Length: 384
Length: 70
Ligand SMILES: [Zn+2]
Image (cartoon, rainbow over all chains, first blue to last red):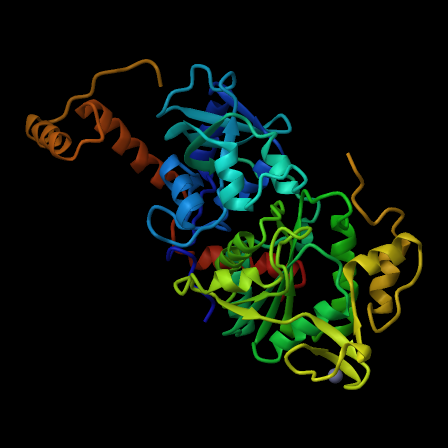
């Protein structure tokens, strides 16, 4: 059976029919908040149940509870704040109880009923979520640009934000129907923000050996400079799956959601989100959602142990490497040989080779995948 | 939301609401409570139903077929 949504019910905050027409007509008269791409993605994710049980942006009680207890005020596990920031100027004249229109790229996207407007503390946020105040941390750096106030309250989506990857974008209600249609009872979800190398393939196939299906769900949207561009990730996976995966045992779709680089906390968040898509298992690798050396390589695994009530089973998979003595891809747990036989696949090394236009060796990356990346004029996100 | 108009409710219900606020707190007046509850009810109405209908499921399957997922 596919997983029950987090909190028991898949949230649906998409306005339809008459109420959508009414809200669209009234949105022009409401106080207006302009939001960027990341928040627009959050709005759509809330409306389509990706963040179930959230029906809107967090009010203070939930926000504080998430910061300090890693749970919503209802006690349900939740580790990453989902908050809407605005400046006092933008909120001039807006009172609790009012409806405000959220505009994205000049178009009305959603209507939010303001339940609460509250101040927040950057240090408190950063120390709890990121465990650091270092502005070199990409999540902390972005936090410094967020505005002084948070606006909490339920929302209704009135217009779908445009999605360049529409043809490979599925919402939870769609993946749930799809998994059922395929007759899958156990589904392992794989989160990624990278192009696949043989280590990833090994980990995914190790999970798929014991589950009915594999759900590969890369994030598209803002990532830090140096990460792969969205279209490169999508095309690389399509090339890999087309040549090396049984078509009926894998579902590939993208999720528009920004990386926070919050390591262990974000790993839990990634798992909850995939539970809402219907996954029963979630693959957690080394340094999940980490960046630099802010988090220990297996710190995320430890954190999962604090959530026996998560409702999705983590699969802890050790980093894969090629062992010349074993003659295959293995991991720490199953290979007894010393480092002299082990060939590690480093993402950093691959990046360097690709930047120089070199083709990575086949024990690191499938030639079809390398082809896609190398033919792209600029596979990496650039500074600025 | 600035302009207010009067609405009539039964005295009995009004007294009950008043008592509720006195005991539970959280609201300054019956008016505030009524406005809050109405908002909640209307928002819940406007959002889609919790369970997917047969028709919705067919629509989803249609899209999945069109995209080559099934
Ligand atoms: Zn070995």
